[in-house]
Length: 152
Image (cartoon, rainbow, N blue to C red; front, side, top):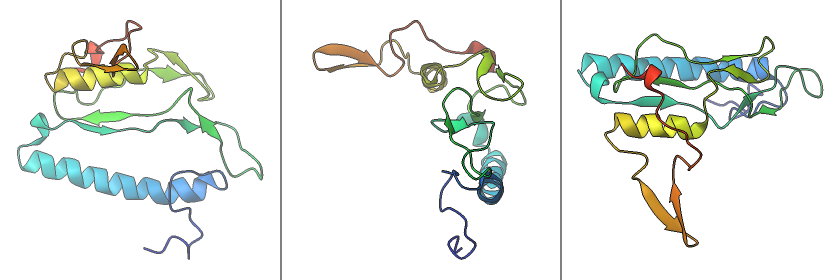
């Protein structure tokens, strides 16, 4: 589909008009993700397939510039998981009343990685590599770990 003709950004980076852009891309994502989950379930593969839909940041709760766009917000954003041992129909965490920052059950991306690795049968504390002479982990060394509340 020609998003240029519709004056829709060809991506999620919606600094100009979040309602227009996310309204369009939200439907595309919802339709595709739903079809994937329905198909995996119908084929008996959903329980063995971990599906993760996430981003590196969300959007500010207040308008930017002309009043239609939103700037980046690394303090609060949505991630959803399905199948592969995830507790279905549950939520985890919350933002302040404006959606500006996470305030309850704040999760770091390292904890998402640790949880995903755990569901894949990999001990995140043993998955290491050396970089510039230092041992590194995908999940960091700051005491972050698996979020057991998400696991069925």
